[in-house]
Image (tube, one colour):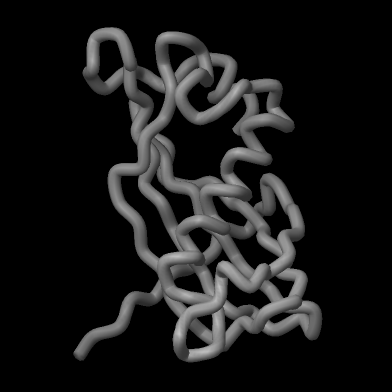
Length: 140
């Protein structure tokens, strides 16, 4: 079976830290695979807020962003109480879309996962794909 291989971009656009809570832990006693997507969304929202945006739906109203696809390469277990550093990188910018990469690192410096989301700009009024707003392009 082939495995997903993700390559984090050279430049880090944003870094944050998140604590792993008991609600993040699955029946295997470690961070649930679904929670990685939630952590990636948290990092993405923190990055957007740092740029001055309200949230993912209101980047440059009526244009926001939506996730078109996602991939995660799991590398190590994560446990309750750990503090995870999430680095965010940007790549593959087109006219209406770009890729966000997420590198998750534990307190010992071990890379526990790399994730990628394909982001598409979306006009929430017309319900159609939109061009990347100039203000967001400038942040890249």
